[in-house]
Image (cartoon, rainbow, N blue to C red; front, side, top):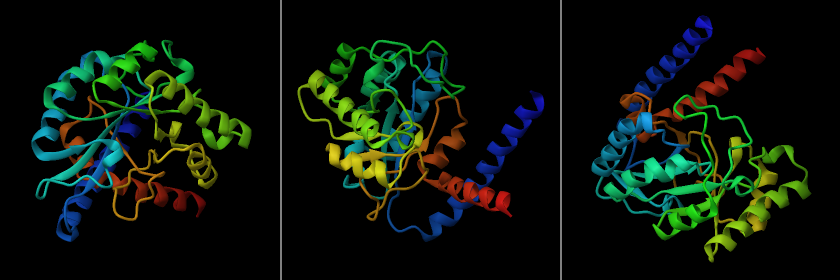
Amino acid sequence: MRTEHLSNRLKISIKLICAALYAAVSRLLQRGPSRVVLLYHGVDKAHLAGFRKQMAYLAKKCTVVKPSEIVTGNPEKTKAVVALTFDDAFVSFFENALPVLKEYGLPAAVFVPTGSLGRRPGWTIYDDCLAVDETVMSEQRIAALDHEGIEISSHTVSHSALTDLDDTGLEAELVGSKRRLEEILGHEVSGISYPYGACDARVYQAAHKAGYKVGFTVEPDKVNGSTERLRIGRFKVAPCETFIEFKLKVDGAYHVAGYLKRLKAFLLRS
């Protein structure tokens, strides 16, 4: 266990160092402000102070836009453009994160797995910053978030890896979740995030056919003019991580993690 912990810390340190170097080079080459989407899950009360510090930084240093507007939102001068997304629609978002977002006037989107409304998640949560007793919000709370101006989007029905499904199952997940949310809210739902980041050309095509206009992956990619609307990358963040990690992710520097992942795959094949 200790060896595994040290290995994880080493991986985190390598990513941090590479991201810091990448950020330094990017600032010299970058033209105009960066655009990034941040990916949270829940916000545990134990880490609420860290989340508040992160939101205070975004409110002061960045232009925070609705996730549906991340490609088109206009920055203020040279400020980075950031969008906030929260997967899984956990109760801790409603109880802990929402008041902080309202305090700083920050927009956000919540992605809802409609088959688990009001219940504990039926999937494993891999996040050290979350309590193990998380529960998915009820439809009443989802509707309340919509009234607060939070964008409500789909996270499928059952939180399945979409690439593992046949065409019939894929359609059921995409269409079923969209239809259920639209029944709850009384208006169109046009956004989706793909559970586990499991998406490919077939999934994108099915999402388009189902009527989705924006889709979010878990790949740490910046957003630019060539970004496809149904495959927008996101940087996974957490309230308990170090502030320097958070700032580098806001800068888009953890885009380097994608290069490291491909390098590792290449070395393993060699």
